[in-house]
Image 1 (cartoon, helix red, strand yellow):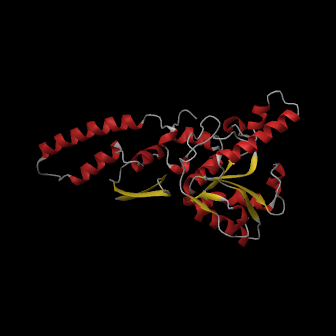
Image 2 (image 1 turned 180 degrees about the vertical axis):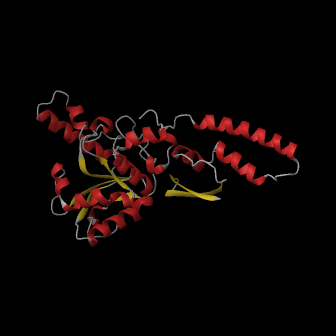
Image 3 (image 1 turned 90 degrees about the horizontal axis):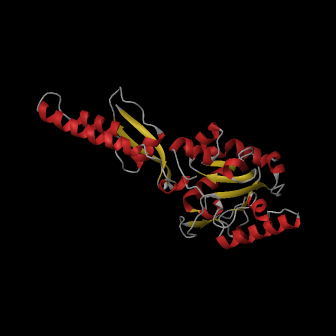
Length: 288
């Protein structure tokens, strides 16, 4: 029997592979798929493949020795795969950047491309995104417009310098408003430079063209209602949902969307978890 496995991995939001498995083989878990995609043999898959390749009758003693050796190796591999996944070992589309995990190197990102000249973006601003998500963005925004919705991308990739300016202005506002810890108040709404997902080119701020204020009223607009209901079909999640600030460290932002890949986006949406919670649950990620 040939089974088809799908996982978010390198370069594309999906990694497809085929393996021959006996009818009674157990399905692979998401973590096993992750390791399989990275080239690490999973114990169960290794032993199944060997059993299928070996003849049934001839050289039985030699085959038993070979199978025993492979089983020992498989056991060791399985033990290794149980080790916690680190953030650095995750595929590009699951890269996590937050106030607990800064992006140290501003240049450690994918190739950037300018958003096309469309009615859903201001081409004069030269907004850029990771080239690997450009097609998904265009598909999502075009689909929204076909349904009479008017989304508008107002922010995408940001340099550290640009983020520093946004952050410092928010700090000053917090001071003017009388906050004793202005930096903490500011960082709840604007991430410090190095801690913003916008540095990765995988995040977008999208507003309704008829209401461009970045506040909670965005959630009532037609654009946000459509995006929240359909963004996962194009590989995006609402990155900072309501009631998840304790996990994300950021206030509710009903305009900030993050690319993670279609399958992952649908899974996260169905789970009701934010990205930090989902990575910890699905991959056992430590140091979040």
